[in-house]
Image (cartoon, rainbow, N blue to C red; front, side, top):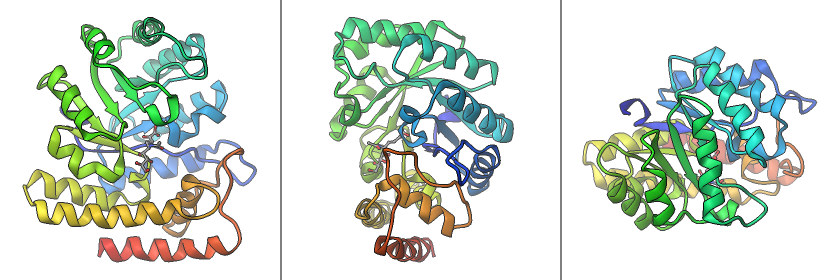
Length: 297
Ligand code: NAY
């Protein structure tokens, strides 16, 4: 499980100028992050715009990432999809490609009972030999993982971790306490990376890591070496940047993609209904990019 301990960016959907999933750009972003020194990649989650992509596009992304950095980074395939049938197909495909773990949100749209969530995750787990990481993100799914269902899930030894994006850091502490020493808890909210690590998260997976991997690598270094004043200070800088990224028109991912372009990695824009950054707000992107550079320096 050591291979999952470190900074794991949530990977972005990479499109060409026509909005088609791009092999070249997917591989370029993978290699860029490898070179930055991250530990792994979380492919096809919210940041991968999974909800707006069909199965073929999601498979293509999984494949391009594996072809470029498989064996060099810990690769986690997010396979959550509207139906179990699709999730199982993605899970089998990720296993064929040599992914290191699977992950999934609970079922979305219909509010299903916990027995159905349990069945859904278990069907995915049984589709391959890969270990599984539960994804708890109540802000987007409307379901907050209960300690009851958590306890039931971890009876299955293939469940090796949880990526927890609920905002109370207490949830991280409770999952760690219930999961035990070898169980991996991934911090979800990037704004609380340092707090999450201190209360028991082993590692982190986040949607803004790839925009500024250097800063999260530094934060991790400060936490790991017990340099808490510096850790708190870099978290403050990170939060100012996240708030700036979320303040532009469009949305956070379109802002991040504009920043990445300025950092030399063009992964295109976002897919509708996500909206691109436009007009005067595009000028603000350069200032955010400069602020990232200044914080790294
Ligand atoms: C994924 O699934 O791709 C993610 O890991 C995204 C997790 C992000 N949460 C949401 C609601 O988008 O990392 C967070 C988020 O981008 C960050 O905390 C900034 O708000």
